[in-house]
Length: 211
Image (cartoon, rainbow, N blue to C red; front, side, top):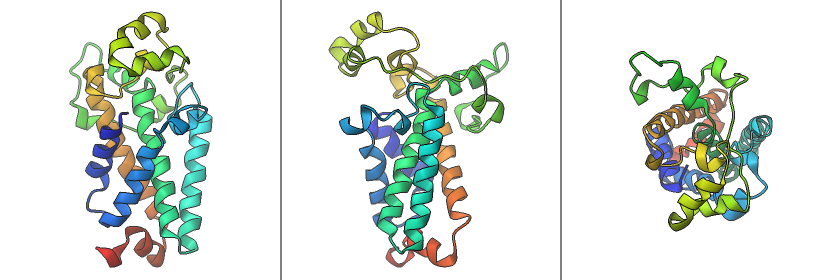
């Protein structure tokens, strides 16, 4: 997703749960994943190129880093690790066809509104039909510039990131479903991680003394 939507997701899901200082570090680490250095050669940051196993492993590694950092009293490193793996979890819905598979279940029926999307349907997460957009460099770069976007779509195949992404409202109604799924997933990840914290780890992570 575009940077502004990652920020919206973070504020909608975590706003008020952590101190402003903690949120600032987490959000910055999240959006830093979209810098050029994080775009090339890091499919695991964004669930690109069908790198599901690598992306899940990355999330697990960063989650473990967040926990170990808190145990050593390093809240700043924990916040950064948390922000990094949330970026990947959020991009899952914008860079894969999960939302399309979920929407297709309601073909011929009334489609539930976006807030009712299920972000963790096990049948879809493990579906053999699940795919994520492939990044075809250098032509994929043309997609990111408005003047050459139409040209890129003529050149690139339908399994490309350019065709499959739900990164902004320009991609149609499914974008709203991707946003709500990402918001719900962020809350799930927050609760999953903090649920196992000791009282001291929770205090450090939430940064209660600065609230």
